[in-house]
Amino acid sequence: MSAPLMRDFWLSCGHHLLDRDADGRLIATDEFLKAYLARPELAPPLDACAAERALHAALLKNPRRPVSGAEIAAVADADARENWQHMVAFRDHLSAHRTVEAAYVAMVRNGVRVPPLFLDQLVHVILRNMLDGSDDAFVLRAAEIFFRTQRFAIHDGALLAADAEHVEAAGESPLVAMLGLPPANNIEVINEHNADAYWQRSDRFDFALDLTAGRRGLAALGMVIEGWIAHLLGIAVNVEPVTALRDVALSWYVGLDAEATRLGDKLWRGEALSDDEQDRVVGLYRLTFADASDVLDRLAGEPVYLMLAMARDGVLRAKPQNLVTGLPVRQLAAAS
Image 1 (cartoon, rainbow, N blue to C red):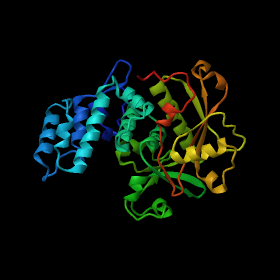
Image 2 (tube, rainbow, N blue to C red; image 1 turned 180 degrees about the vertical axis):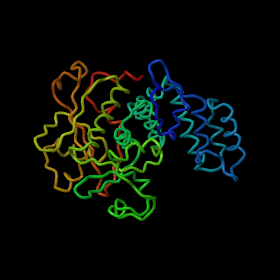
Image 3 (cartoon, rainbow, N blue to C red; image 1 turned 135 degrees about the vertical axis):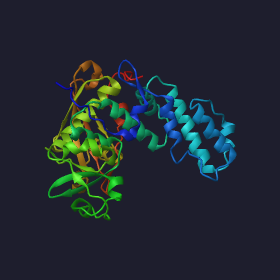
Image 4 (cartoon, rainbow, N blue to C red; image 1 turned 30 degrees about the vertical axis):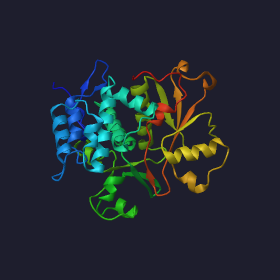
């Protein structure tokens, strides 16, 4: 009998360039660091100055080579100088930590400022590692919400999330027309009949996800949240969707995006949400801890609520880092 076929996905995150330690966490390699040097923001254009070309060439030979402030200051183009400052700081932060996961946790805990693009890329590759071997395309598509901006719309009573970047380039399809966007490539809603195509199309980010209450998408996202907390913090939790905001007592809550945090703050203050604000709530979850010793004493036995909400324009930019920094846990050292 032949072994089961392992399906690869998200090749664009560069996970093949990384090593793994005995615990299955990611180790940054020279090859992974060199991949950043191929980005258009860092690859010198034809009119780049000699200092920029020399810096790029030196790092291609040794991506961990120390870079002085004077070398960056010698780059003539102001935008290029800023890009190099960000890149070198990001590289140094990764190199200072044993694993990519530890670097990410330290980054979000300590408020280290990095370009959002770099943060999203770390989330992308960490999720790829966390979900290695997954055979559930709905979970993989739900995980995209953590590192890809989503555009939401309601169609035939269903709440649908589509990749915002893909939608902007999308062609004529019922979903694109519904979203009021210009035509391009078709967008399908992932379902039981087409889910097997996800692996071949995973780097296209062209599947929409149904996040209607009671359907598979919300449950899949809950599984991603459980895995994210376990992988980064070593804490086992159970996350289940809540169908309505009413009768929810917010002893503690975590907003998973800026709009959800704003709405959660209103509820925390005892203020009612308007009908429009309630309609913008994409998902509400109840989180409970498997081990009560992980939780702050004053919240023992109390559920934590997690909220996702789209902005007025129907866009959602998730902040999965809030799950690392916002939970009422005793310690957050598992990934360091």
